[in-house]
Length: 153
Image: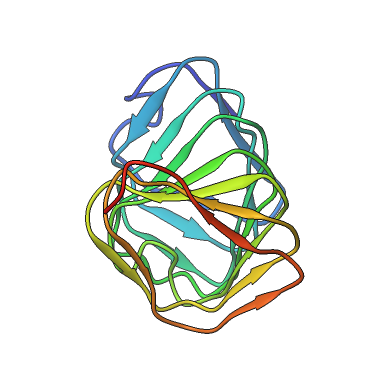
Protein backbone atom coordinates (compact mmCIF):
# COMPACT_ATOMS: atom_id res chain seq x y z
CA UNK A 1 0.00 0.00 0.00
CA UNK A 2 1.55 3.31 -1.11
CA UNK A 3 0.15 6.42 0.58
CA UNK A 4 0.09 9.89 -0.96
CA UNK A 5 -1.42 12.00 1.86
CA UNK A 6 -1.89 12.20 5.62
CA UNK A 7 -5.57 11.30 5.21
CA UNK A 8 -5.12 8.43 2.74
CA UNK A 9 -6.48 5.89 5.25
CA UNK A 10 -9.41 8.03 6.39
CA UNK A 11 -10.17 7.91 10.11
CA UNK A 12 -10.40 4.13 10.61
CA UNK A 13 -7.81 1.65 11.82
CA UNK A 14 -5.41 -0.19 9.53
CA UNK A 15 -5.61 -3.96 10.09
CA UNK A 16 -2.71 -6.04 8.76
CA UNK A 17 -2.15 -9.78 8.52
CA UNK A 18 1.59 -9.99 7.89
CA UNK A 19 1.50 -9.70 4.11
CA UNK A 20 1.47 -5.91 3.87
CA UNK A 21 3.99 -3.29 2.86
CA UNK A 22 3.33 0.29 3.88
CA UNK A 23 5.15 3.01 1.95
CA UNK A 24 4.55 6.58 0.80
CA UNK A 25 5.06 8.57 -2.40
CA UNK A 26 5.50 11.74 -0.32
CA UNK A 27 6.24 12.32 3.37
CA UNK A 28 3.13 11.49 5.42
CA UNK A 29 2.09 11.52 9.06
CA UNK A 30 -0.78 9.20 10.02
CA UNK A 31 -2.94 9.32 13.15
CA UNK A 32 -4.68 5.99 12.46
CA UNK A 33 -4.57 3.09 14.89
CA UNK A 34 -2.82 0.02 13.48
CA UNK A 35 -3.62 -3.59 14.40
CA UNK A 36 -0.78 -5.96 13.56
CA UNK A 37 -2.00 -9.49 12.85
CA UNK A 38 1.53 -10.19 11.58
CA UNK A 39 4.65 -8.22 10.77
CA UNK A 40 4.20 -4.98 8.80
CA UNK A 41 7.02 -3.93 6.47
CA UNK A 42 7.68 -0.21 6.06
CA UNK A 43 9.13 0.59 2.63
CA UNK A 44 11.08 3.71 3.56
CA UNK A 45 10.85 5.47 0.20
CA UNK A 46 9.55 8.63 1.93
CA UNK A 47 9.32 9.61 5.61
CA UNK A 48 6.36 8.13 7.47
CA UNK A 49 5.05 9.19 10.87
CA UNK A 50 2.82 6.77 12.76
CA UNK A 51 1.11 8.65 15.60
CA UNK A 52 -1.80 6.32 16.29
CA UNK A 53 -1.63 3.42 18.72
CA UNK A 54 -0.11 0.23 17.27
CA UNK A 55 -1.26 -3.04 18.86
CA UNK A 56 -1.41 -6.71 17.95
CA UNK A 57 0.76 -9.80 17.75
CA UNK A 58 2.98 -8.63 14.89
CA UNK A 59 6.03 -6.41 14.66
CA UNK A 60 7.50 -3.74 12.38
CA UNK A 61 10.23 -4.14 9.76
CA UNK A 62 11.73 -0.80 8.66
CA UNK A 63 13.46 -0.78 5.26
CA UNK A 64 14.61 2.07 3.00
CA UNK A 65 16.54 5.25 3.73
CA UNK A 66 13.67 7.55 4.79
CA UNK A 67 12.79 8.08 8.45
CA UNK A 68 10.04 6.25 10.31
CA UNK A 69 8.65 8.08 13.36
CA UNK A 70 6.72 6.14 15.99
CA UNK A 71 5.03 8.43 18.49
CA UNK A 72 2.08 6.44 19.85
CA UNK A 73 1.88 4.66 23.19
CA UNK A 74 2.15 1.29 21.49
CA UNK A 75 1.51 -2.20 22.80
CA UNK A 76 2.33 -4.46 19.85
CA UNK A 77 3.93 -7.73 20.94
CA UNK A 78 6.27 -8.36 18.01
CA UNK A 79 9.81 -7.15 17.51
CA UNK A 80 10.96 -4.09 15.60
CA UNK A 81 13.68 -4.53 12.97
CA UNK A 82 15.57 -1.49 11.66
CA UNK A 83 17.19 -2.65 8.40
CA UNK A 84 17.94 0.79 6.93
CA UNK A 85 17.46 4.51 7.52
CA UNK A 86 16.35 6.23 10.71
CA UNK A 87 13.87 5.27 13.40
CA UNK A 88 12.62 8.21 15.48
CA UNK A 89 10.87 7.52 18.79
CA UNK A 90 8.31 9.93 20.23
CA UNK A 91 7.21 8.07 23.37
CA UNK A 92 8.64 5.69 25.96
CA UNK A 93 6.43 2.88 24.60
CA UNK A 94 6.92 3.64 20.89
CA UNK A 95 8.55 0.22 20.34
CA UNK A 96 5.71 -1.70 21.94
CA UNK A 97 6.57 -4.80 23.98
CA UNK A 98 9.15 -6.50 21.73
CA UNK A 99 12.86 -6.09 21.14
CA UNK A 100 14.67 -3.83 18.68
CA UNK A 101 17.24 -5.25 16.23
CA UNK A 102 19.30 -2.83 14.15
CA UNK A 103 21.50 -3.23 11.08
CA UNK A 104 24.83 -1.55 10.41
CA UNK A 105 24.65 2.12 9.46
CA UNK A 106 21.14 2.73 10.80
CA UNK A 107 20.14 5.55 13.16
CA UNK A 108 17.99 5.60 16.29
CA UNK A 109 16.75 9.03 17.37
CA UNK A 110 14.05 10.64 19.51
CA UNK A 111 11.73 13.60 18.89
CA UNK A 112 11.30 14.18 22.65
CA UNK A 113 13.04 12.86 25.76
CA UNK A 114 12.54 9.08 25.65
CA UNK A 115 13.56 6.12 27.83
CA UNK A 116 13.70 2.89 25.80
CA UNK A 117 13.09 -0.15 28.00
CA UNK A 118 13.16 -2.61 25.08
CA UNK A 119 16.18 -4.89 24.61
CA UNK A 120 18.41 -3.71 21.75
CA UNK A 121 20.53 -5.98 19.52
CA UNK A 122 22.96 -4.38 17.09
CA UNK A 123 24.27 -6.33 14.09
CA UNK A 124 26.56 -3.46 13.07
CA UNK A 125 27.29 0.08 14.18
CA UNK A 126 24.14 1.97 15.28
CA UNK A 127 24.14 5.76 15.19
CA UNK A 128 22.33 7.45 18.08
CA UNK A 129 20.87 10.75 16.86
CA UNK A 130 21.01 13.85 19.00
CA UNK A 131 17.63 15.48 18.39
CA UNK A 132 16.45 14.84 21.99
CA UNK A 133 17.52 12.87 25.06
CA UNK A 134 17.42 9.13 24.37
CA UNK A 135 18.09 6.72 27.24
CA UNK A 136 18.69 3.02 26.58
CA UNK A 137 17.28 1.44 29.73
CA UNK A 138 17.47 -2.27 28.85
CA UNK A 139 20.09 -4.75 27.67
CA UNK A 140 22.19 -3.68 24.67
CA UNK A 141 23.90 -6.61 22.93
CA UNK A 142 25.17 -7.77 19.57
CA UNK A 143 28.18 -7.42 17.33
CA UNK A 144 27.81 -3.68 16.62
CA UNK A 145 28.70 -0.56 18.51
CA UNK A 146 26.94 2.72 19.29
CA UNK A 147 27.99 6.11 17.92
CA UNK A 148 26.42 9.27 19.38
CA UNK A 149 25.99 12.06 16.82
CA UNK A 150 25.67 15.79 17.58
CA UNK A 151 24.06 17.84 18.98
CA UNK A 152 24.76 16.70 22.49
CA UNK A 153 21.86 16.03 24.89
